[in-house]
Length: 327
Ligand code: AHR
Image (cartoon, rainbow, N blue to C red; front, side, top):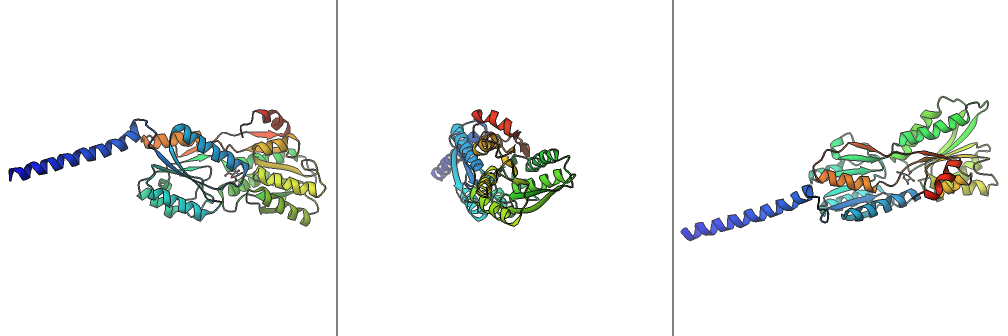
């Protein structure tokens, strides 16, 4: 009897030590600042643009500098691939999941699965339209409505004394994505005070150069008089420039061009006068994301919305800024 009691005491003690060690390990991650065993699952949109490449590089470099174990997945612009990746991260029991949602809607179920598994989710670059804000910790990224407004405001100023209609064609980003929805809304809001500014055609170019070219060719064929192109990103504007030149027209002169991003190739085109105005969208979100990962694991309160600071560039400003551009 005595021997049995001793055995139970020994077993209970061993169990206690094991539990304490396990708790200590997760406590370490939260408080000690040790990063080597922190795993971050990141579900990227794809590789559709120069902006996205710069964003991916920023995330990979910052994760490696922070010493995190980054599990990176490329969804090739498909929501179902991102959902699959997030489910894999949940199975792998990563410490934090981050992702840039390809479209705004349809995330509640998978985000609830992450929440039930106790894994915090951070949104970067693009937002979701979930009503339940407890499904994610924070959203780090640009204000896309503001970007659209800046583009529209510049155009309104350029044509403030117009006495005839100004025909605008619009190349939208990926249908259903936050930047496409918001950049359109912001632009329309900013030009609505000038009744001469008319959007005569608007179609998606899926944020890619190839689609931008293809859709611009169709715009040129269908519309004899195009004064302005508003492209939701540089890559589509660059594709459209090829179409405009192939049609024997001068981009930036015969057709004024406004775009968003300010990546290297866009800035190059702007410095050559082919793009007249670029609204910046900063892809270097890696450092802010890694800070947020550290903070959330340390149990700190994080702002629900972290907005990236951004500027604008005329052709002259692009020329001056180009040599020091990081992406
Ligand atoms: O979500 C940001 C947008 O996605 C960028 O403006 C565009 O270039 C990218 O594909």
